[in-house]
Amino acid sequence: MVKKNACIFISGKGSNLKNLIKKTRDYNFPINIKLVISNNKNAQGINYAKINSIPFLIINTKKRGFENLILEIIKKNKISLICLAGYMKIISKKFIREFRKKIINVHPSLLPNYKGLDTYNRVLKNKEKKTGCTIHFINEKLDDGKIINKKFFFINKDENLETLKIKTQKLERLAYPEAIIKLYRNR
Ligand code: GRF
Image (cartoon, rainbow, N blue to C red; front, side, top):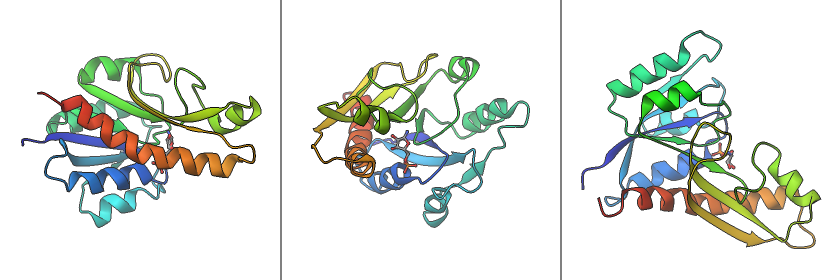
């Protein structure tokens, strides 16, 4: 199969990146990770790019025109999918307009509920019965684009922030690759 070129944007730990790298070893997985971009030079996730010999780029988002630079590099690398994986910067409307291909994100709640930050805390405070993760397209509003995949679990009475996070992230490892497969099915 002809794989699509993907770029993964990270800011931190990179556990989703690590998982996606593992998946790309499968002949039938529809993407290859051509490039990793981090806005944080100390992001642990960069190490997964290093040990897997994937080119990576650290972008200084304080520099004017940094998005233009990313667009240029992405064009050069013939990237057709951008996967945000714990990327903590807002992607501008202009960037979304100009990239024109797919940009997807993983969010640690059952969207459209709990958009934005601090999701685990808010879910616990509101005594929700279930939570999970969502993979969705990016649009011009925060955590708002069309949903591609969702997974949930029921919340126990003794659940805390840490257990909630562990369970949600475990589901992300399943939901993100599944969403990517879904995107390119029957093409
Ligand atoms: C994930 O839990 C994701 O839901 C959120 O940020 C976290 C990133 O984790 N957007 P990692 O950097 O992939 O380990």
